[in-house]
Image (cartoon, rainbow, N blue to C red; front, side, top):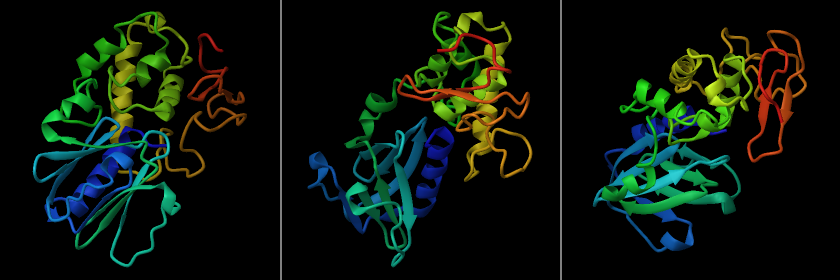
Length: 262
């Protein structure tokens, strides 16, 4: 599932392969931009911002994309078989002489003026993996609404940018509280510890193909609770529970995590 670490890694792979090179092909397979052809222009850079990707192109244009739940940008060399999914799921194809970047299942894909980037990312809070990271500001924003459930506060990209559902569940487990506990009921030291842990985990995972929150190197123990429905908790042995009553599934350990549940 794409989260801030995945987007950071994707942006840097695309940037290393495409930046500074003229486009030999440009194909956006969405009706609004289907006739736009920027072939010949230089792709300047690919920058992550939270869970958004900003691909800047010569002439003051930016291709804005968001991976949401299932999107992906994959790189191929000339002649390599495309393996990211069926053709009808392709939304964008950007080619240079050495690589082709193919965007699959991109729910958000738009071409904007580079000067208008704040209109699509200006609302975001401090970026956990960005140069604007501000620990104190992130803590302040998370704590701004004491009545708000912790899980909602962590997922709100206006508070801190980069956390998705996997990290939400894992952070709540590490704090030993459920995602439904109001932020104002956390012990005074917990918000700072949570934000610091979030930053540490995303930094540790930005170069890993397989996300890990469990310490050590066991391949069968990567995440504490996410995706582990009915499996025993690594700490206490209690079966992990889950809830899918809302848009995002939550996983938690009833033995280790205190607070309200659905």
